[in-house]
Image (cartoon, rainbow, N blue to C red; front, side):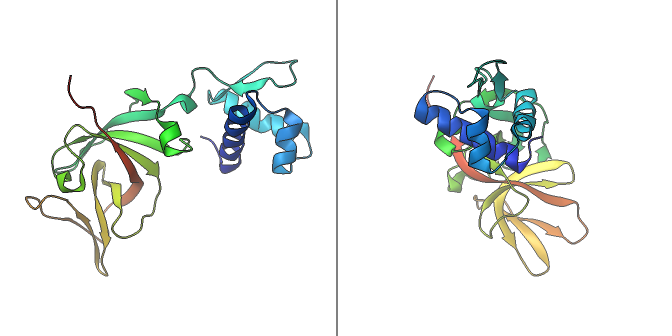
Length: 199
């Protein structure tokens, strides 16, 4: 799991490589982040390499390039989520979606395939893939992926004084009411929807 500084350094390396068509040196990374020790920079580069984001070539000045096949190459598609009643969210990566450039920094994004029709009036259809930014809080009215017990669902987030309502975008369905004491948490905020059309 990457910490915030490692994510920032990864984002910097991506931007630098995109702009200059080559990766930054260790000293350039150190200057950008106020890290005076080259060993301090190497600590984060090693963390990124172990996570599969970088491929380091020793003995080369600009040897910390992005891995050709790495988690940064796409957003992990981690399973299915209900847009009807909540279902168990599968915790396995099915595939990777190379849409990081569309949604910006993909280090805290994940994707879920929607099952059900409770969000159709929000433009989220059965079989769509929602792109979700990992967050444990959300603004009222945001579309969130929420976990109730071990079941995940995608709904509008409507906090009330005495409860939380997870509201569908389909009049056929009633809101899911979460009261104090229930095992509830927000997994992320939906930032986009992907859909394939035709065969």
